[in-house]
View (cartoon, rainbow, N blue to C red):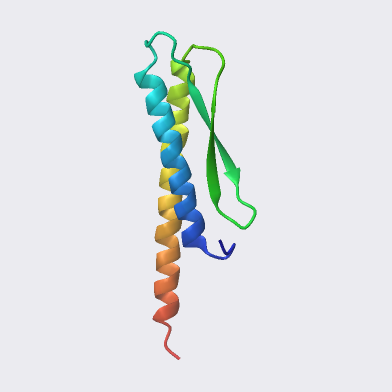
Length: 101
């Protein structure tokens, strides 16, 4: 991915946040399931720009609902930030296209 590609970078971050949201939802949904081991999503910077998500499973079979709620809130903020980034990039591109010489 080209580091100057704002749209591509933001879309990769949205995909990583989607993975994080799915993992968090799975942890909450299975909090009372006997033997369930929760997972965690780690956000990683790609070498050529963008973000990827890696999932690891905990060894301890205990879901910390407070942690999961914090993860939900930070994921929501991440989604909003990336959507704003895409919107701003679109506005900048439109302005450049509409420049009259």
